[in-house]
Image 1: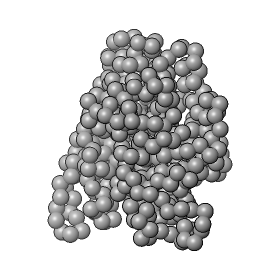
Image 2 (image 1 turned 90 degrees about the vertical axis):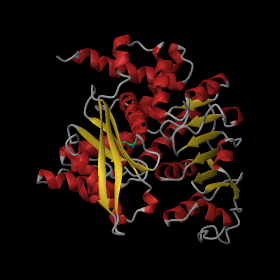
Image 3 (image 1 turned 30 degrees about the vertical axis):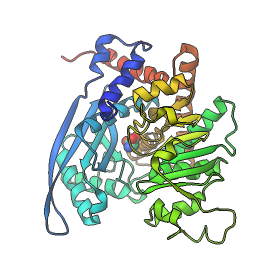
Image 4 (image 1 turned 135 degrees about the vertical axis):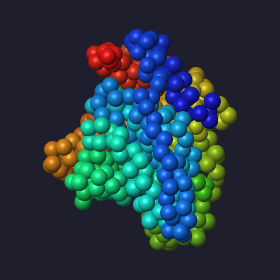
Length: 431
Ligand code: GLU
């Protein structure tokens, strides 16, 4: 089951059903995506070869508004994974009360093996494949794993070429020059940092010098590391596909960020091969140790932040976990079996649909600015992000405390399911 993210999402829903005030018929309806389109994408690569890729767009539920969700490029993309991720987008937008439903897209590919031109062609072909089902009021894609503002620019351009005029509002996470918003790139990491601060306040613990291990140092993990470091927390470990860096006294997050931004791997950073000048000769920073991704997950830290892929905290390793709290920056990192064990051990988990909602919140703010043909300064965007994710955090805590729920995920799911079900009940069944 751990291998199937869709089964895991359904099991999370089932766990919340007994506490949620939702009609069983509507609940059953919420377990099925509205539709999933599968597209075949032949692309002529820069090498001259033609490769046939497979892509998907799942639109899970639109009762609360237009579909919203990212597009990921990854070898492990599958229809089931995209459908699970679209479901999680539905619960996420409901929990943070955005006027959206949930969707997700993906293409099975290994971006590291593709040139920039290959990626542009693949993105444009994928956009053409799904263009009849997206649109500013229909379904609004955004970045996810291995996609970025440039990918969104190609999607926006391809869609606009077919429409015959510029349609910035069709995607979010765009470069600033074509209707992006300040603060979008770091928004998910900022949200992760904000909810970690709130969690510590709630637990009446001090975040200053609290030790943090972050699995994954991509856009989300690296920004969360930087912002938590600025908040006074002590980031002691982080990783990428090549391995993990660990220093019990704390990592030089700025130097690590510069190294990875320049295209370096964490393995090389630990080996010292390409360590940036920030680390050189600065006696504050020791050489970090090389550990594995699996070891990172079981470090004795105050907070563990999985910020990579699904299904990394499972029945197999949950008993070895020593973190006292988990903040889920990735989508679906914990299986339901592991979740139950964490609840029994009283380890607080801030669930993904709350912890990583900063990205879609700022996507919404970008979409609103595009609709208004107006732009806001970074301070306005960040203040609105903090207000919205803070409200969702407080509502989740209130639900958890007053309803006597087993854990924060169940609290978040009951709120999200009730809001989505209410929308279905008001709208009724067509015809
Ligand atoms: N891909 C992000 C997520 O999983 C952001 C989606 C969006 O901004 O629409 O939440």
